[in-house]
Image (cartoon, rainbow, N blue to C red):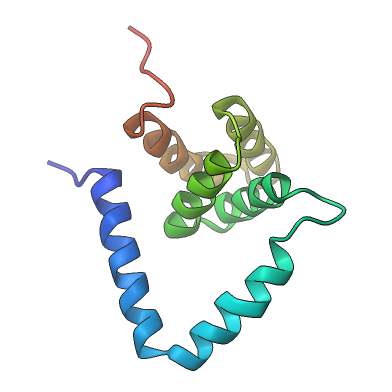
Length: 119
């Protein structure tokens, strides 16, 4: 039986917090001013920035990044339709490899109850 993506997410955040404790200077620098500067309101709104980050994450194949950016985009009001459109852009640039990574996003949205499997 495979691990639930939500169980994976829980463990991911637990390990992330642990790694931040072990690297406090880097954590403060990277997750303080850098993230604040990038993900603030500007010419682009915060939701758009998170959706852009999701496209990059899908293209890069970073599972943790895909989960994190999808979660943050949903918190900022993104819809599943917007998220899948972003995935489509990533697939247009990365082909079937990116499509295979976009399945992580679909799995996450399904387990969170945002989308349903069609009968």
